[in-house]
Amino acid sequence: MRERSPHLRHVDTSALFGGTALDLRHAHIDDEATVDAFALFGGVDVLVPRGSRVSIGGLPFMGGIDDKTTPDGDLPADAPVLVVNGMAMFGAVTVKDGPDEE
Image (cartoon, rainbow, N blue to C red; front, side):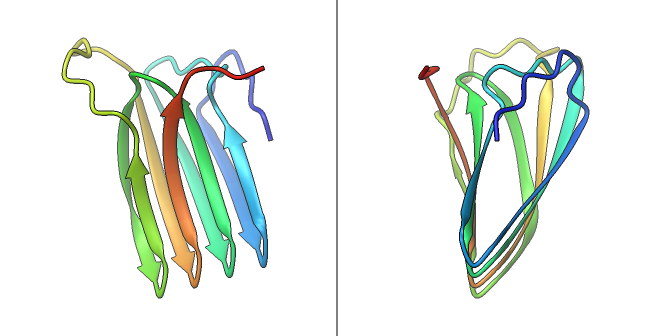
């Protein structure tokens, strides 16, 4: 699923016995946005633009919540924040960054 919202605030995404990718590389975050991701026997990949400020938390139960973004210490203090709340039960929620691929 690709999100191109001009003012992203909140997104819910789930994967049950499979996988899904939420592509936020073209979404615009004004100040702060939240992603609630749920994976049950599957995986959710959240794709963010390189250089995003990301805050990750949640509950992994027999699964994992992984931050695979590239650390960037040069972000401005007022950079928007993407909060990812994950719940992974026998699955995984992964946040990744990278260049746009079209």
